[in-house]
Length: 300
Image (tube, rainbow, N blue to C red; front, side, top):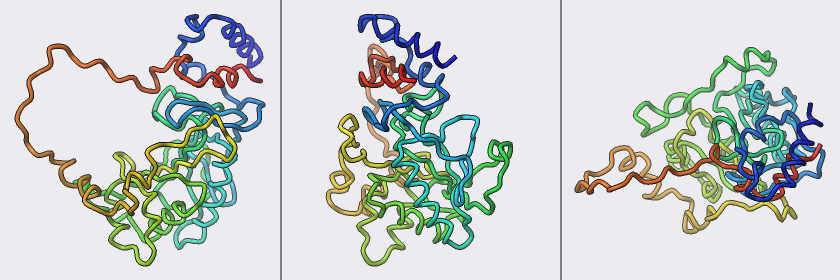
């Protein structure tokens, strides 16, 4: 079946850029792949518009981790991502009350846009890590589909709740201090709590970036691997975003004040025509992705 599909992709590649392959929804093609390509590992494009060659599957269960929601088949990543999970999970296992880590989505076998969920996670360099401290690492496949993580954010979205612990902060600090990490997305109240609690050198907080929706998990984004010319690390850099500081300033407080209760302003006149819909990852066709992604799909 895989050989037949690859042959069809190869036939599509012979068409002009305006042909049917170039205009095919990318998430349909990448979502249909159940295995990685037999290529040298490489990330192509950007985190939100790219693909992954030679991906590596994170084992479903390791000595200090378990991959969750196995039905999604999103426990694939660049080797750098798999090695990072192994490193951080070993550290997590040293924390009181943590047996390791529950790992959420990394990427599809060949990366690319997904049929549901994330806009990013397309190059195998993004990792979702659950906030739920693992008490055991022998969950069945069925249990991994049913169990849920925990939120560390209060209902009013302004502060952390009782689920937040010093161990969460230690884990996020260890992740941020890893040289492979570019930035980490987490709910703003968690960063505020860390800014208020951190002592000594706080430079690691620069990598911690507030973002909506990241209260059940935190999202680690790795830098492009050394020598991987087809991969583009995100810009602006965290240093530029924080103007060289830690990000523990008024811009952080905005997330739990004005962002939740925007100041009233004069009503703006209604536009004569509705604004065009912003395209997302599930709207991308193959022509929107780097050229190398067609080769990733066609490879065995």
